[in-house]
Image 1 (cartoon, one colour):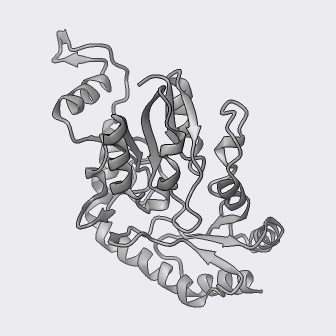
Image 2: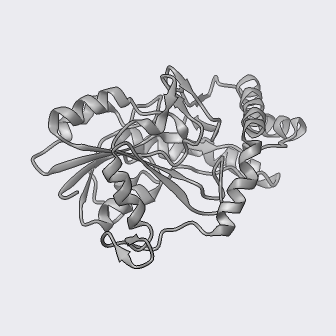
Length: 286
């Protein structure tokens, strides 16, 4: 890929950084205020003769409007890469979200739903591209004595693989327990002054994060302080909007910038007791 890559300002910094590392220029497109994914209706206006790809993020495991993005990409002969870091176990329209786009990446970092301590996966629908990605992550090796081409060391260690294999049999139980936490928040939080994440229709979600959006940053900071005083540690995620970081030099993205200052991800994990959940909800509601 060369030139300009259309991307979202509302995701983790690694997404924008990968574009800059490759000598390309990130061109930001603002986000949908409810789904928090890239606003597909604004993508075409950002395409120029230098555009070579769209790099979009399935935010908190919530799918982008993949059909619209595919249509735009085909029309303008662009590649589509999905940052699907949060998407382990997500299905959209009855199939894995990883089936969409030219390449999807999934994170196995320790903070993720399924993890190996560190690491991740790359998924490609084209066999030749998959083969190139695979040899590239292992120094370019073709067996012990030959090489396909240039590569780096991006292999997963045996210890990381063991961690993943130990966790894999419990994923159904983990998803069920996380669903219970999400259901509790949905019922017990006061949404008269908060907004939650709108999950895209036809999505089987994985309950990866529970973000809430405040009316203003002052209210967020007040609530965060109250939670911290009770040793409850929510996360400002994603913050800041990536168009504002020094090396990105992006244009103003009003929706992303506003939401980034007002969004807080609440604790969400197995064995989060009802007593603790009640305390979290009461502190937020108060």
